[in-house]
Image 1 (cartoon, rainbow, N blue to C red):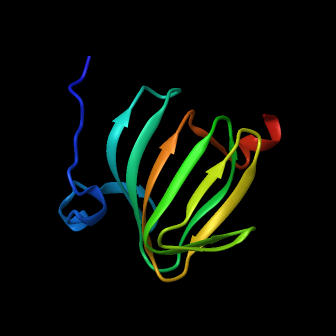
Image 2 (cartoon, one colour; image 1 turned 120 degrees about the vertical axis):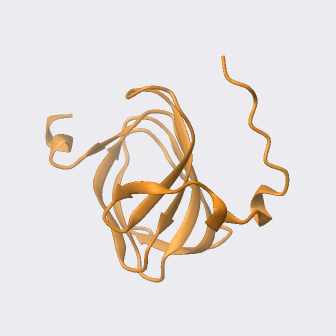
Length: 119
């Protein structure tokens, strides 16, 4: 069992001081927790301007809170302060033209294209 994570003033913390690691081209991640390869996870994600996430299918709920900048998907542009909840079975890709930082929670890992076709 892990100790509780408490981040006072999480919305105003120095996000640049977090331990960032490569995630995808132009996207970095700072994990809050991961429950194996098939379980729940939470992280901060930082997108460079122009960074993209390819088409993917949500096997479980995904919650995204845009903290800085914006990201755009098939439903429009989502600026800082936007909460997005993607239910299981939904698909999208996204781009962050200006760059952004989000707080993201996954109930289950996503399924990336081309694996979507077999899901």
